[in-house]
Every structure is written in structure tokens, then in C-alpha cells.
Image 1 (cartoon, rainbow, N blue to C red):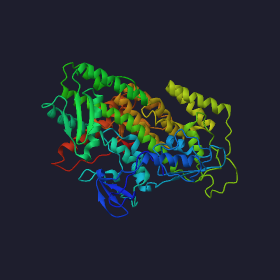
Image 2 (image 1 turned 120 degrees about the horizontal axis):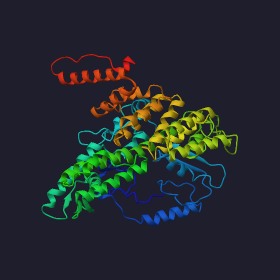
Image 3 (image 1 turned 90 degrees about the horizontal axis):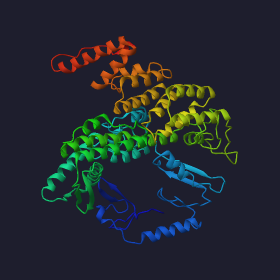
Image 4 (image 1 turned 45 degrees about the vertical axis):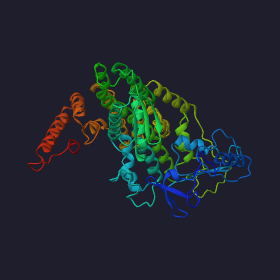
Length: 543
């Protein structure tokens, strides 16, 4: 066994076979319960791991159980089998870890041992992931919190253990509980610091052990906001130093640069957010007000960018693990990572979906035939990612369908959304490719995300309308369904105004129907305590 940190042992019997349950530890060998600080850490673990590594590399050990970090930078030629126990963190991580097998060029295998989610859970919740707003929690019911604030960690769809998707989602939720909760934690921690600052310029705050991670996350946000300079972990809490040179003007300029950096990283429009632009015009902003307003902008940006990247990573790895028989795994991987698209009819003949009985008759996989025209389409696809143009991209995508490579580019664009989930050009092509592959419902969800990105950046009605009108060519009436959709990206007061302005240019009849529906909906809400709600058809039903 190899791991970077010692697993420790039960203080009662010395067994390594123990587990954590809501902050307490229980030994499977003797049944003893204990706290983290009582774990036995004696023994020279570093020496043991070095010796284990040497024995494995020298082939004195035929099998090694390790954490995923083992093997980075190590070139061992004769590894014949790599087995992943549970899913990796992303498709790229899986690909790198799988690549440690067969480096000699001889026949090798890779296995992924995974607990898939229940089919009903996938149907109800998985597709919601790409359209989450920062205020939304991850939609999986097994992650809902009980009265004590801990996640339920039990499957309501009949699984006796958490599926791998839930386990990866739990890691995401621990860092991104929801923007609303994150902001409450930030403001609460700041208030605790201000109260302590009355007695000490560099206050020290006590933190219960179960809230250490929460407070540390809040302190990290405050450091990004330039409110504090440093914070140091202490046995019972944190020692914090406030920024004595804080001014609203400097802090807002720094925040603008920080937010632009996050947006640039994920392909979002690189401009000052409208809310921040308004704050830049308030030179007398008080510190508490700054923390509340700037903290919300920072957290919303982190959720729109970083959380979205991790969600797309989870989705792509799940899609790979859930491929049905006949859909080649090698094709999925090559389409994800290679620029040149692969033809629809290629199968490697050398994976479990191509050969379910694993009785391979060949020594290696079939090699796909790549035509120069397909290679040129891949180059043009990359060029559109670098400098997007709606008209040119639309022409390119129709050519890709005619050449039989639209499915390949759809997989590629799904993978690229892990790095650039807010890139409007990439989102446009992803929506269009879903339409070309007769997956309009999934394309509509991605289009919702594109609208969220445009609205967050303060795009005007004309820009949004032109973007959606161009996508109508690939998914008919996509714009109408988004403008009128209940719970959709325009279903809020500001969004409704945008929708009515856009429809006023193209469909005045539907604009009138929407105005009527939203008026009746407001009346229903206002008079709910007096009379029964008024029944009326939605514009979608009329359409």
C-alpha cells in the first residue's frame, strides 16, 4: 500500500480498519469509538512508503494499492493492469491515470470499478447540473442536509451505498454549498472578526472543529476581497490580521481585476460586471457594506466559474462510465482530447463496449482513417473557438454534419466546457451540435446557460436576441421556449423585461401573451390569501 499520509491506527487495537462518521471515528475491528486527535500516528510511515515504492518499481511487489498521486512522473514499463476503485475527479485525470498501464507497448488493461447512480436519479437530477444558478444547491437528494446541518448521505432511490456521482458531488458541495450559504458564512465570519477586533487589532477567533472548513473558506474569501492580509490556523481557531491600508477604491479595483481573471479563465465576456461598475462610482463605501456587496459578486463569480468547471468534469466522466454496449470508449476519449474529429462509424474493437465478453481477437485496436477534409474541419473548429463569429460558425457546423463528424465535435465541445463553461462561442456550437444530433432537449439546457452568462455580463436585448435567433436554425423555436419557459432564464422581473423587448422585435403576439400571463401570475400571488388562483393557459401550451 502507498499513500502520501499515514492512515493511522485505532488507539484501542491498532487496526487500520476504521472509518469516519460525522466527525467521530469507529473501528471495524474492535468496535471502539474515538476522536481524530486520538488516532495513533506512531511508526515511520515515510520510510514504509519509500520502501513500498522501491519494491514495486523493482517488481518485487506484483500489486500496489495506492492513492491517485502515485505514479506521477514515474515510468514503469511493465504495468499490465490499472484498476480505478471509484471514479476519478475528471475525465482528464482518468486518462492520465489509465496511461500508466502498457507503456511498454504490450497488451494491458484498465478497469473502472464504479457504483453508478440509480436510473431514476439520473433522469430527475443529472441534467439540472448545467443550468444551476449560483444560489442553487446541487440537486441530488442524498446531499440534502438534516436538522444538524450534515448531508443525509443515503440514497432515496434504493442504492445501499452512495454512488460515485454522489461521492464526487459531495466533494464539490463541501467547497460550494450554495452562493447564499457561502455569503451568510462570509458575513457571519466577518462580523465575528469585527467584534473581536474591538479588543485586538489582530483578533483570534475560536471555531468549533466541525466549522473549521467553513470559516477557513470565509477567511479565504475575505483575503481575496483585500479585507484581511493573513490568517493562521491555531489549535482552537484562527489568528487574523486585518488590512490596515484598506480603502474602497483600491479594494474595488483589485476585485475588478480578480473577477476579470476568473472570467477570462472560463471564457466569459471579459468586462466589468454591471453591479461592480455601480460600486466603482461609490468612493465612500463603508467596509461592512463593501463586504456584503463585493462578497456577493465574488461568490457568484466563483460559483459561475469554478463550480461550473467541476460540474462539467463530473458530467463528462459520468457520461464516459455510462456508455452503453456498442458506443466505443476509445472513441469517446479520442473525441474528447483530439482536435481532428473521428468518423461516426469508427469502433476500436478493443474495449468492453466493443467486445463485451473481453475475448479480444486482435493484439491492438483498429486505427481510424482520417481524411484531409475532416482534419481541415477540426482546424476550423479550433479557429472558431479562438475568434468566434456566428455566421461562420453556423456554416462550419452544417458542413460538419454533412461530413459525418458532428457527433465527434459534440463530444469534443462537451469536454472543452470543463475548462471554458462560460465561453459564449463554445456554448453556441455545443447547442447547435446537440440540435444536429437530434438532442434538442439537452441543447436547450445548454442554451439556458448561455443566456445566464449573457445576462450576468449585462448584454443588451439585441445581442441576446441575435444569438438565440441564430440557434433557432439548429433547434427550431428555441428562443420562444426560453423566453416563455416557466422557471427558465428569463423568468424573473428583469428577465421578463428583456424577453418582452426581444419578442417585441420578432413576435408581438407572444409578447402580448407573456405580458398577460405574468400579470395574472402576479395577481394570483397577491390574492392567494383571499380567493382561489385564476386558471390560465401558458404561452407554451398555446404554442
